[in-house]
Image (cartoon, rainbow, N blue to C red; front, top):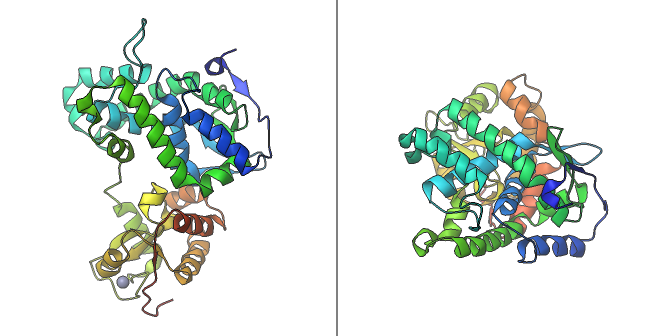
Amino acid sequence: MAGWDLKSGSITEYSLSEDRIWLLFNFVFSDSSRKRNTYKFGLIKSLLDSIFNGQKNEQGVYFSYEQLFARFAENYWNLIVKYDLRQMRRDGKSELSKVEIILKTVISKNKTLSLLGFEAIDDDTKKEVIKNVTAECRKCVVGALYDDFNGAIYAFNLKESGLMLNYCIYDFILKYKSELEKLNYYAWARFLEQVNDDNALVRVIDKLELATPRREDLSIYREILRREFEEDTCFYCGKKLHNKMHVDHFIPWSFVKDDKIWNFVLSCPTCNVKKNNRVPARDYLLKIEDRNRKIQLIDNIVIHKDFKSYSDDLLQRMWQYAKMSGIKEYSKCNGNL
Ligand SMILES: [Zn+2]
């Protein structure tokens, strides 16, 4: 049975060496792994972008299909609608992949949507797109990627609401997140070069990277932190913030690619600009871990939702792996720890 036809699969190998996992990923990135479209790259990107949001349990690390394919839909919206990049090899049967058809159908009904990023489109359209993309991807890519990994990557059953990532692959992805991102972009770009005109391919790696848009509006987090906890002081220097405050990604967004309250602190503009795309020194790590132990006890729906994926060692690991990926440390300390 072809992988994409599989309806369920259990994990075939629980304990894999790093060499073995590299071999499996390198196979998927290579031309030996059959690809009619770019869905496998899309699902790997969704897993990488969502990796800090998995929920650990005894069987592995759980990701809902909706969570993964909402990311997928957002990425493809930007690649297809904004950058006009085709995602499928033309064959006798069709010119466009089903996901391209889903998105292009939405645009054809309302042309103004083509001018908007995924974040900006109305909730009903967004929900419909995510629902249709999830239905297509459940069917066509979950089993295919599982098969390419010889059943080592995750356990899945299409009747259930999500998949269970092998704990050992989860650890590997955390550790090599930025390397895997680069390899995935490279293989994805090579595929796109085969199916797109030169015009669409200008700055194609940038387009793949920018397909995960950065959220502009973090006011909900600012209000929670302000009201519930930070007492209007800068996390880094301790000065009063007055009305000039930034919501800072403690571990930089460029590494995390996500917004969770356990990774946010309030900062004065000076510290935020100085810190820029760097990880704070270790003392600040201890400070935010301590802050998170307290903040997770607060009864608030956003806090409750965001902390579902949090564990005591998560920030420590993110901090360590972000540095391993080449992100520099910000060590300016004004004595407010
Ligand atoms: Zn400051």
